[in-house]
Amino acid sequence: MRYRLSTEEVKNLLFDYNEIKEIFSEEKPEKVEIWDETLRDGEQSPSVYLTKDEKITIAKYLNEIGVALIAGGFPAVSENELLTVKLLVKENFDHSVILGIARPKKSDIDACIKADVKELVLFMPISDLMLKILKMTYDEELKLIGEQIDYVRAHGIDVNWVSEDSSRANPTHLINVFNKAIEHKVKRIIITDTVGVLNPLSTRYLIKLVKEKVLKSHPEIGLGIHTHNDFGLAVANTIEAVFLGAQFPHTCINGYGERAGNAAFEEVVMNLERCGIKTGIKLEKLFELSKIVEEIFCLPLSPNKPIVGDFSFSHESGLHINAILSHPLSYEPINPKIVGRTRKFFLGKQSGSGSVINALVEKLKLMDMDFPKEIIKKIVQKVKEKQESAPKDELKKIFKDLKNSLAKITSGVTDKEFYEIVREVAGDQLLKYLDKNKQYFNAQKFQSLDNVNNNSENLDLY
Image (cartoon, rainbow, N blue to C red; front, side):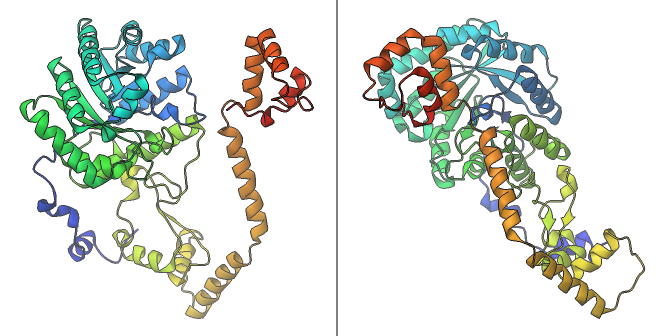
């Protein structure tokens, strides 16, 4: 399509605040290496379970698109998980390194060793709250960290240290933990906002603290950032950390992950690229990767999800479409082709003459027909009336059906299924317990195991 204004003309008419050099710190890196957590933290999305083949499919695509580090999984979780990580390592990717995940615990580490990983991620919570739950002192934790890092390295495996719950940890202990990890020769240290409580300003403070107190004397150590999206700031906090020198941003495809999710891979990548930081990612494959993972996860994305949502390059407003026909930069900060997308124009209540004229050309291919203005106005009016008169009851029914179907997809193990598992495994012990406590469970409702099973939705296990 030929636009009314040239790209050069448009750029001369726009002021880009992201090009002001003074807004960035001197620590801003020229490039980063993306560390993707889709196969580990992404799989922790409620109701999600990835098969061995699905993990390999996603990993192959992550390697192809240019991801540097892939958290392959937690081998100690199960034999199947150990086998999956081992198979991922065996792929011997030309770009991506597969990371095994472990607590500073020999059985976890041994599982990673069996999986043949060349790099391992040790993680442990370091906030006072979590240490109280673990019944551990600062000194006990520091001793354990040193011992277990040494144990991993004795097997010829590189170590990345993750301080879980960094964003709520005592600053002195945070610094001591990182220094202890570096003392025992880790390759990278990672700051984590495990429950998503940071904002860009507190992220800035935390990054500067670690750089000043830990990395100033150890510039060879890589710095990573792992954020969660509980307050909707995972991407913003990740970008802020990178601007201050974090070279290993953690991401999840489509922002999947625990609770509200993690920093979305596609959003982090595009934000960094537009600010001149190279990610090594093939941008034109972002949309394809998003759709592959969405289908595997069975978690539909919001249509207005940035970069990869169905509506992210769609327009209905007549004012917007008319401006876009002059040049897309008027209302599109990203060229859809860059991320493997195409632009869409919708006809509806907000449409104007420009929308209709474009539709006549693009949809009906009426290139040379010169419609009088009165005809165009009548078409516009009919289009508006058509949408405004559409029955919303039918739309609401479809919406409810979709929500109900989604609830079934994301239900995980139901109460009924859980009870059946308990009954199968516990057997006679469960019968004795129910009989002993039948008053508590209401004898009228639960006179037999079958009745308990049929009424399991009424059984409050907590």
